Figure 1 (cartoon, rainbow, N blue to C red):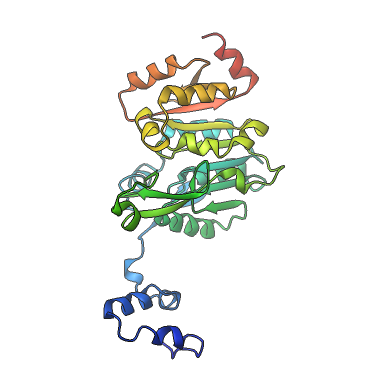
Figure 2: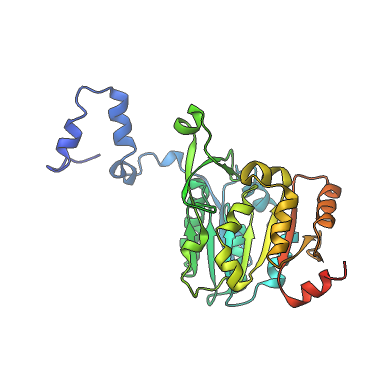
Length: 306
């Protein structure tokens, strides 16, 4: 600790007398006072700043999921990025749900400017650290970082994340789920919003928890009709949200959305039926496709042609 204990601390510290040395060491190493001294700085995450339309993103070069690709190519998922650049306007309010290290958070900030607002929702603490590093480097005041998983209720979830990507699932009944799991907090995102706080655009990349996340945002969906970009993976939806891909799409259509797959160039063909989207997923022969959903009159008119 580098200092004598205060009179208030001593009763707590002295109560550890006679306990295992490893327990005493663990108590001090994990304490704020020791962490603030920076003696363990050698185990900090390495990061390099990448530029995304003038906004810095802190990326770990050893991150095989996102960081390595962003630093090598200077971009990430260009087809989805094209939708951001086309649809986002100055002053918009954006939710980046499953923000990861913040590539799309940065792109949204660049698009909406200082008059807009972005919420970066991310449960992985390593990613949250990088998001906060970038927020301070950019000196932005219109970014809210939410260190939690998006869901339809409050409660604990299990997070499995070998690198920056991760999947949250309900806690099981096994001892490992309760004692050895990385447990994170789940929150409904409607709880973050004032009654009159607008939402214009939502990006969902939550490895199958898209349905739970949208259920937790239904008040905002029904009031503001935000545009939505999301990953669609029927297998992951079933595992993380206990809903089939078809039933998830029916839920979106019942909400009044026209939905379409995002092409390689960012173009979208809208549908108001489930099967064309299922067919697009099956034809892609990949683990997921990216969808764009909107309630705009133009999209609904186009969808009615199919």
